[in-house]
Image 1 (cartoon, rainbow, N blue to C red):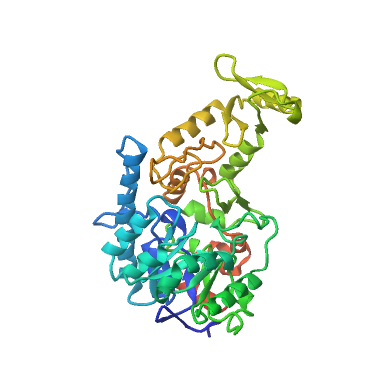
Image 2: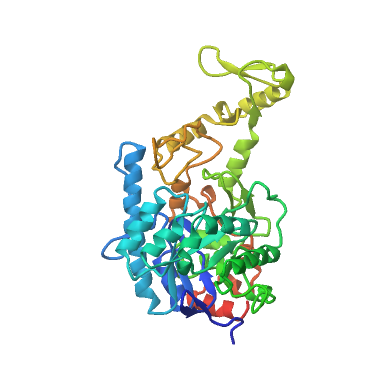
Length: 468
């Protein structure tokens, strides 16, 4: 007996269980097709998806471009071809069951071009597009032009209201559902606003209820809301299921599908997931997108935290008002900056520990790293391939003159590089960004995963349907 009943989504009856579309190469055609075959909504990521050869083997992208713009074009071409490959695999795997969606990030480089390219070449294979990480105003218009439903990811009623008034009200018929993603509990990039406290999670119920009331005023009372972020057991959401106040509700699972037989992530990553503790995920703001995001605490995140901790405010001229009157010389020709006496003592300590390379940030501060760390940061910035619409780390922008005209930020990192490396098992997973939701510790506590058990997608869906 299932804990929930089938739900009509975009005209088709499915289990109200949605696979989260986890970024670079983590939700692919095989995992999405298996989820759909189990009767739910499978989602493959179209964010730089893997290209496959005639034998179904991964074909890595080797950049040939001499500059960022040329590499950006190569990346867009690869992304379209990869997403079409994954759509075909998903279609072949689903066996005519469920629904298939693809996930894109609005702030990824060339997002609109990728959407057009994939939807043109994968007609009939993709039933819907989910999209977050930004305000995707043109999502509805693009999807409607191909007869595909769209699923915006938002974290507040206010955000959806802005999208509706500016754009979605014109293409309401193609709105399949609205994904509410809890910005405190979800993995990956989150939609926390400047008015919300990242250290004080809010109860999602009143926020989702506010969204439903808004939607009813727009004539969208029967359009499902998909609850995402912090979803593990359906029994935890018993009061939501069949709740007339909330209306039709589905549930998105992002973290649990990481640990399945069909999940493409490396075995070392899967093993790491089984041992995580409740405090092992950090909500941080190091991403070059500027968004908050949640990831597993490991050496990669620890280095970023420590890098920012070795940071002092500076002035180019002596400033008695801020007590920055101590001169710190660095660079050539006796140049330097002014810091406080206390900060000068801290700097001397860092220098003695080998963090001898100061790097300027856009916020009138200096951070201190090792010479090798500085060389790696500069290499990564120079190798930028334009994976984002705007990148704080490299100052790339995917339009106009292709620059944000802001100083590069050495406190951040190349997100494309680390996500490709961890997804394909290059290097140690402890030294890469490992996205996960804040309930990931439940792998360790859930008896379903006892003795290292890794289920198939079908076994996982069947387990979820029992409420567990």
